[in-house]
Length: 369
Image (tube, rainbow, N blue to C red; front, top):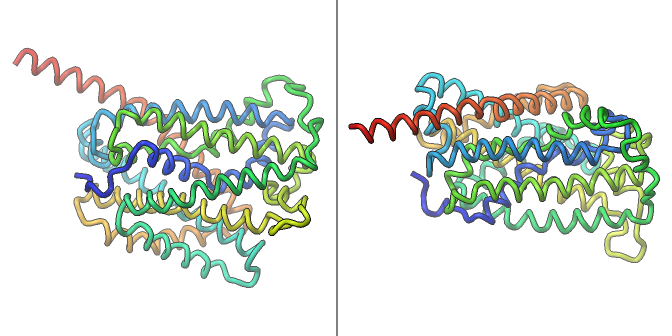
């Protein structure tokens, strides 16, 4: 059973959902989107990607709503049996562990390149992991309260920094719309969809909600908020740097912040402030993924959560340190996205169908018994 102090409201669930979604993708999305489309129409691909992510999230939500106050790790056995449930649950857990490791490594890469050039990556990653452990050791309630502080600060700073670039924004850089037709947009939808890693959080978030019937609202509002932020990012980054200027940059969103300064303000250059705030957002995604993985193991094997929290630390550290360079890190991110598309975009569909069929069969049996 879920502890009362871990129960969260609908608005808190939205904060957790968006905090999980807005991670490393926003820093490189303009580049990956332009590389995939080859046109300024990335913003259309973002909208299509959001729609696909929303559909996936709704399916997972409908599945979880069938089993109130239970995560997939608990109700999966009822749908597909014990051993198949264990197999799929372990795949889910492996995915969350990999996401946590990826976010830790991305954060280390950013901090090492922009802020602390002489600090070794292992030191940055270990600090993040132990702070994450401390933040989540008391359960979902404490995690949510932390994100309620981080989220509004992130949004305010992001909006301020993005719209400060209006002075270097050129609308012509976004033209022509659909100049090469719809096919480039459809090609770009794959990369933008992978940036909307979010649906999987519903395998456990519904269980903590005071009003699980509001789960679909959480998905739709959460995806909408993320989509608007991603849209603002790609529009202003491409509008300021142009399609050609974006393709040659590793972190175009950060480079946009470095392209302007406002004299006379407390912060004349915004990239350092933006980096600090977005590091908090990376930390949020890391924490949720870490907590979900440890929670899944504890529920799957009916053990206390704390030992699994400790046990996952070295595993995440080894995965985060495995990529040898930044290109390998991005390859790991692509792997995470493709795995998420299969695990949480394809598998939930037959699970929902089987669950509905079992419910109908049980009601029929009760009726004639």
